[in-house]
Amino acid sequence: GKGGKGGKAPASKKTPQSRSSRAGLQFPVGRVHRFLKQRVTPKQRVGATAAVYTAAILEYLTAEVLELAGNAAKDLKVKRVTPRHLLLAIRGDEELDSLIKATIASGGVIPHIHKSLFAKKG
Image 1 (tube, rainbow, N blue to C red):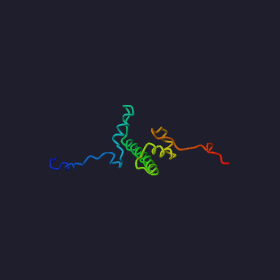
Image 2 (image 1 turned 30 degrees about the vertical axis):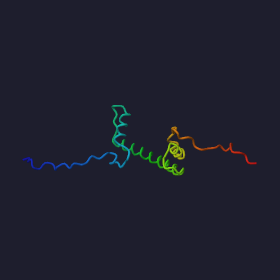
Image 3 (image 1 turned 180 degrees about the horizontal axis):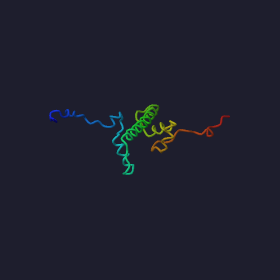
Image 4 (image 1 turned 90 degrees about the vertical axis):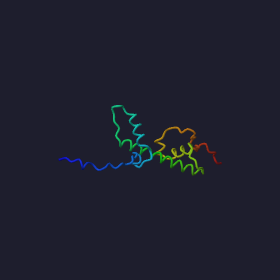
């Protein structure tokens, strides 16, 4: 008959692994998923891969902006990234400039003097 000796192999206890580490991301996939679920109507569902994809996009954009801002800070020979460096990085990159249309607090303005304002020679 059906003996009780076989059974299942003892379940190996795997340590829980975050969805961020599974996806190889730094941004929190679980938190992004929670925020996505808050933004849809209660009847709608949010797929698990949507959170991973969104977190990956956010991480990429953050890394891109921070790299450019770090380069701007390095050009000005300082070690700390300030809002000014963020503004210079975003407005200096054509694609980021079209994407981010927000005003950056304490960012200042892009240096620009119109040609007609320069003194005439002669």
